[in-house]
Length: 200
Image (tube, rainbow, N blue to C red; front, side):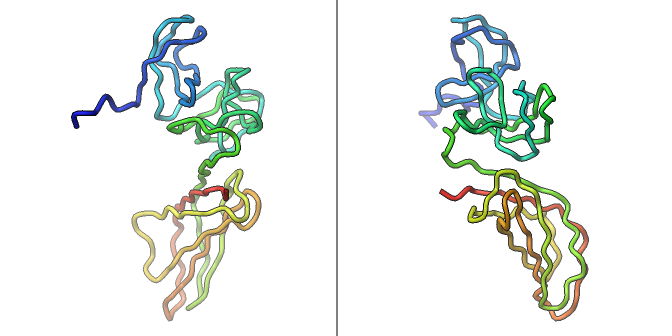
């Protein structure tokens, strides 16, 4: 395309303050990770995609939870109020942990705007009677009843089963497997993911 500039995964920027390689940095509404050390007024590159271990404040963060940028501390945090959402944690980190592993979002979102939440895990449904169903749950930090849920199923699922999911309680997504056949079935364990879209 004649109007293509570059892929945008790495953006040039001029540092407003001294930064080190691996630091988080907010450029307007774009959050990223600094590629190379730069002093105030010097140029560097900002990586805006990928997963990184980022320095965090003394807050606990669960896997899949939104991660926010604390502009005062210049660290990520699990505290939403007054901060900007910059991604989601890909693993849990306790309050005393110095870093948390974060999957970056494309842009920072002001608190109160939409952000997707993620969760996944192995679900081993017990035997399901003909025309019956069984429910199991996944923990998704930040999910609330009324939020929208999208299922992420594996490439191969047992024939004759239909899956549904919804937020059944705070931080909890229920996944239902319904047997639409005329015989009982005992499916093998499946790794199922969910994407939760907070209600407006």
